[in-house]
Amino acid sequence: MKITNVTAIILKLPSISRAADGTQDDLIIKVETDENITGYGEVDTSPYVGKAVVDAYMSHGTCYGLREVVVGNDPFDHEQIWNEMWTKTYYYGRFGPVMHVMSGIDMALWDIMGKAAGKPVHKLLGGSYNNRVRPYASALMPDRPEE
Image 1 (cartoon, rainbow, N blue to C red):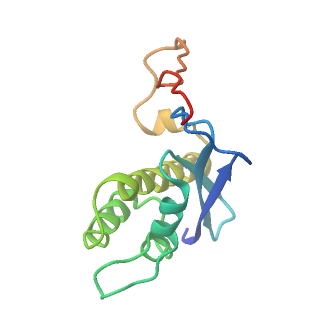
Image 2: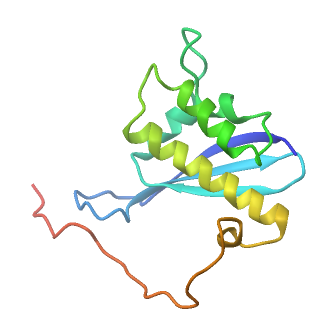
């Protein structure tokens, strides 16, 4: 199996406020394979910056957009893919949005591996320890007055 494409999909409400609650915009990473298995990951970063990290072309022979790094690889080689992403992004940053997008791609790879194996990802990661989980949700930040 080979990765054929990586797409960064921006989700955004029509109107954005100053609220720092993570519900107004988002970035979805879509990884496609030659076996028609598609994986999805979610990235909580500035969506347009994250998309640029995926879409950028190779520059200076030292910095690459992550699509360019990932396409052509076997998604089951997730450790090697992660190391290659780490190596080929050192020129423009190994923090913030770059790490967020790398994590989104990693999520999508695990999604593909789970689908290909016919198992939930938690089974691939060592199994479950609980059959119930207490739900949690947060808006993170208190309301801020509009300026």
